[in-house]
Structure formats: C-alpha cells, structure tokens
Image 1 (cartoon, one colour):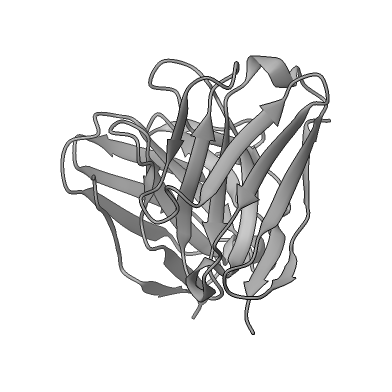
Image 2 (cartoon, rainbow over the protein chains, first blue to last red):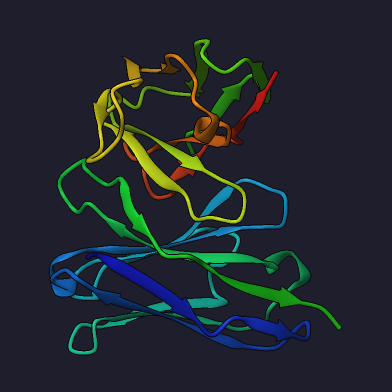
Amino acid sequence: EVQLVESGGGLVQPGGSLRLSCAASGFTFSSYEMNWVRQAPGKGLEWVSYINTFGNTIHYADSVKGRFTISRDNAKKSLYLQMNSLRAEDTAVYYCARDHSGWLEDWFDPWGQGTLVTVSS
Amino acid sequence: ETVMTQSPATLSVSPGERATLSCRASQSVSSNLAWYQQIPGQAPRLLIYGASTRATGIPARFSGSGSGTEFTLTISSLQSEDFAVYYCHQYHNWPPHTFGQGTKLEIK
C-alpha cells in the first residue's frame, strides 16, 4: 500500500523553528517528485514547496520563501520541511503529497494524513 | 499566478440528486486540472485528473469536464459519503501550484 506519514508538528513560539518529516512506503520514493501543501484551520489548500527526485530542483511559495527549506533523503525514503522564523500565519495542517511526476502530469496522489503546526506564544 | 475560482462556495443538494460544481481559471490551464475531495478531519483524496479522467477506485458517478478556463465536476445521484469539500487544482502554470477555495457540498 502506498503510504505517506508526516510527523514533527507541534506548538512553537513565533520566530521559532520546526522540522517536519514525511516517511514514504509502498512505492519507489526516489522515482517521484514531492510536495508540501498546507491548510490553515477552516481554510483551503495552499501549496508550499516542491522538490524533484534528485533534490536539485526546488520551488517555494512566496509566502515561505527564505524561511522554509525542503529536502529529501532517498535512502531513507523521507521528505523534510525545515521551517524557520515561524509566524502565526504559518499555523496549519501540513500535508506531504506525492507528485504524479510526469510532464504536465503533476497532480497530487496520495496525500499523507497531515501534521498540525501551531505558532503561538 | 493562475487564480482558481470555485462556485458556489456552498451547494445544498438532496441525496440521490445531481450536483454540479464549477471551477474557473484566470488563464488557460489546458486540461491540466485535478479535483480532490476532502472529508472533514481527513486528507484530500484525488478524484479526477486531466480534467476528466477518474483516479483509481473512484466511482463512475463522479465525472469531470472542461478545458482552458472553465471546468465542471458532476456527481450524479449523490450518496451520503459524497458530502464533503471539493477543491480544484491547476498544474499547468506552476510554480506556484494553485487551488480553488473549495466548494462545500452539504445535505439539503
């Protein structure tokens, strides 16, 4: 079964840092591009970041650029999101999502169950 | 950035009836559009990709249509488990990937 499991969320003070992880199983992780998507409480979906299979092509939403860093370890079948200088508006459930990874075939499937990040003093 | 606009924000439909959800893109996304279903407390689930292709395991009552800037998700004969929030997602002009704000499908 294809599965993504996020971890690392929690309560952090404004200006603090947090590192999220996403453990993949049931598929060849190294063959797929990956994304982070977040959802603020009661709000819609917001794409956060993308990384290609080798980790050498990376994109960020403007809202997190310069503060968040995406990375991956193909040997460990894991995706990461290092979040620094956190703000209240970063409060959200963070999902990792597998990219279908074809030319103009970049829909997201599957998604992990999400991990909640709360930024508050 | 391609802005995705969904309508209506909330749709009230009786079980067994048909629901029609709309999604409009601010510029052409060709057929590079996906639909997701999100049940409260759960992660989004892929329903449709390529504007009209059902994902694996998705019932035939779900259908997608459209291209360019106008898209529709139709759910024929609504079942109780279909009442959820639905999002469209364009993957033609990225980064950034962009989603619609969602349509909440509720029981009438």
